[in-house]
Length: 289
Image (tube, rainbow, N blue to C red):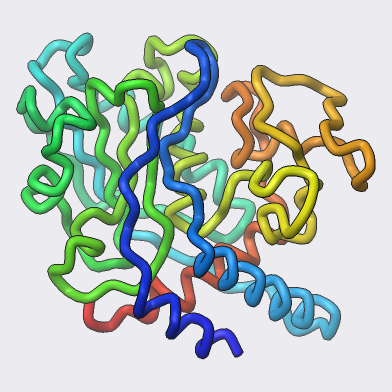
């Protein structure tokens, strides 16, 4: 069943442009496009398969998934204020990313780092995304490319969900994550400078939706063990329960909410299973990419 639905998804999906944030200053803002109807259908099919595997005890502990990772710093000058990130801060960011995913058998392997001074590329939304990525992107569709930019407009970051791609297609070149440089550990963005903007955005790259996807009704984020959530959190509102008619308080500490970096501390087992489903179906199986 998975592959018949996936085939329809593969044939129709085109990466949408990042969405402009609608949140006020001082709150987390993610520009990852909302999942399409096809992507939501795929997630629902994965949910059925994962539930069956759990019920039958066949969801055995997975081997570690190793993800080749490339960091690209794109600044308007070699000054830190213009987006030029030091090696020590990049190391701290890489360590924060690995620490968040290690409990779920996912390990990132840093294969390379480059730094580029280009004032046009350093400003997201200026129309140079594809040009920049065609020049800098490395690795196959299994490789995570993260672009740290000086200016992200009103967003802190965005990534693209796994989908079907062909070699040298725009979907292949655009794949990856784009993140505001001040969000790295030791960066200057108050409340969002522990590196978890990257953690959150990479969650999208691995197939996860926001915990508040769909609100209090419907399928939500299509993960069984993330409680329903009416809207994004802000700060660290302990005890928030925006869907009182549904089981469980809001998952404010989940990396896929919009909490402060200091509030985040977990992915759920269901999210880990979902990552594995998307990884196996789209990224690991893309032999032509």
